[in-house]
Length: 108
Image 1 (cartoon, rainbow, N blue to C red):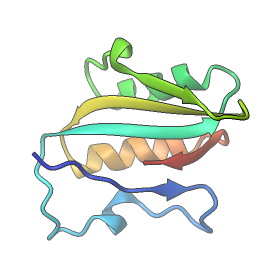
Image 2: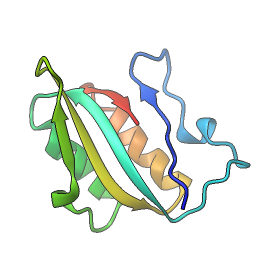
Image 3: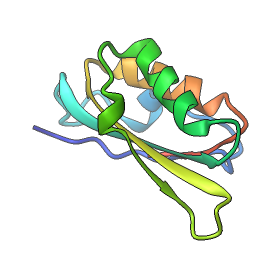
């Protein structure tokens, strides 16, 4: 099993799609376990937003398996949602939807 690790940052000048970071020749096989981590401003129930967004594209997201960690200053929240990714297209759609929210700072 291969685990993909890609970082997207709102501080980048433009958002690149996941396909731009994952070439067709990279050795990633689907379906695969994927612990998506979103880091964003901890306001307006950011945790639930991340879970709901992933659940839009992934069937059967286990909310009890979701892990959160606040930043030391309390401004940011890291939300890790584990799921089984089915395709690059699915991952790209999730990353795009999460990055569209102004609270999201990083996606790993």
